[in-house]
Amino acid sequence: MAWVESVSASFRARHDSADADDAHTVLQTLERTRDRISGRFPRTLDGLTVVLHGSTVALSMTNPLLPLEWLLSAPAARRYVAGWAGREELHVLAPRVLRQRASNVPGSREMLALTAACLYARRVIVENNKELTNVMAPIRIRREVRWAWLLEGSARWFAGQTEHARPAIARRLREGRQPSFPPGLRDAPLLGGTVIDLLAREHGERAAVALCSRLNPQGPRAALTTAFGGRPLVHTEGAWRAHLSRLAGTQ
View 1 (cartoon, one colour):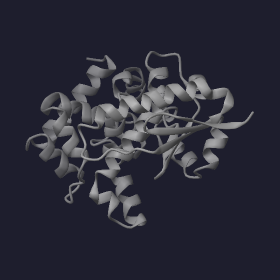
View 2: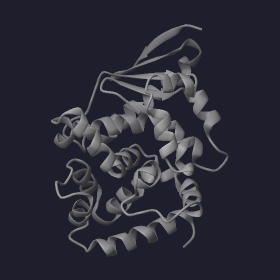
View 3: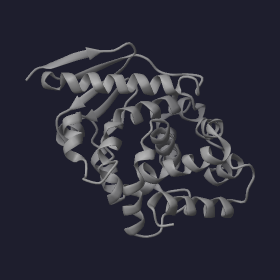
View 4: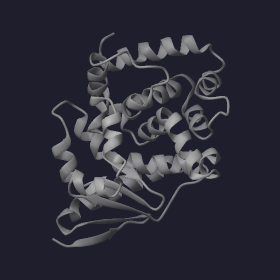
């Protein structure tokens, strides 16, 4: 099968010819995501190319660190780490592979269908964050690891993935140790969005945009204290854990 290219108003897609219909759906999802967040952030991105890969092996060959990211993620989150964002390209598993990757629980297929949208939202968030764009690569990487809960969480929340995550969250709370607050690296893809969700519920979407548009030089704890109106972090943590329980259906 041959590789071909599809285009939309703001994006391009490279894919197997057999994935043409799915590529069109991905492009439309990206356009909707762009429209949704274009009024929230000062800068959006056009001209990105999304590359649809037919297997996890093919995807991994484009980024040798991706298998490590899978291993470092909590088991409940691993299936939702299905791509990565470069400066000019978004690399993601083809929708037919994502459908096979989904579990049988409600929301799993919907979350995976938004993978490209999440990667695009992450690129926009990074592009609007001078603490990530105006630094050398080693510093940027360290910051992205430290703030993974914020970057992954806000990207997945703004792309709409978090609203489908209830069953996966419930599984995470049944497995392993109690998650830290803010979520650590292994929980960032799944639980990071719940922090943003709580903030948006309590203080509105503008507060979520403000939080993810600047990395507080005093660190995540200071950023969360400021974002939640100066409330002591211990009380915000309690509210977040109660929110997790509600999302998981255990409260």
